[in-house]
Image 1 (cartoon, rainbow, N blue to C red):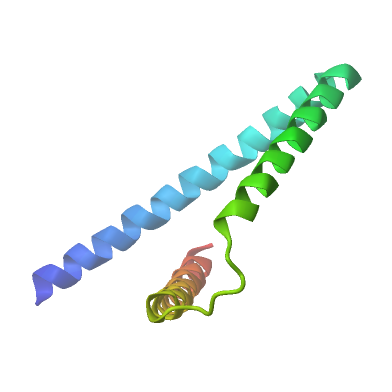
Image 2 (image 1 turned 135 degrees about the vertical axis):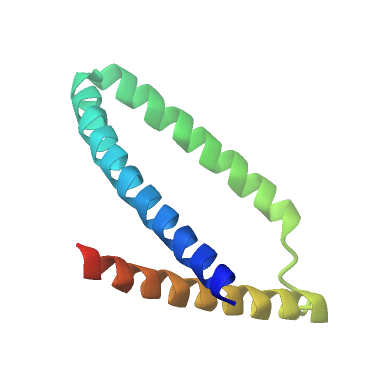
Length: 106
C-alpha cells in the first residue's frame, strides 16, 4: 500500500515537472513564431490562405459522401457518444484537480 502511494506521488511529481518544462517551451515557441510571422510576406500569406480554402472545399466534398443524416443513430453510436462524454468529463475533472494541486506550489 505504501509502495503504491509513493509511486503515485512520484508520478504526480514527474507529471507536474513535465508540465512546467512544457509551459516554458511553449512560451519560447510562441515568441519565436511571432518573429517568423512578421517576416512572412503578403504574397506567401495569400498563397497559404488559398491552399487552406482549397483544403476546406475538399473536406466539405468528402463529408457530403460520408454523412447520412436521414438514418437514425444506432445503439453503438449512442453508446459511443455516451462513453465519449463520460471520458471527457472524467478527464476534465482529473485535469482540474491536478491543476488546483499545481496551483498550491505556484
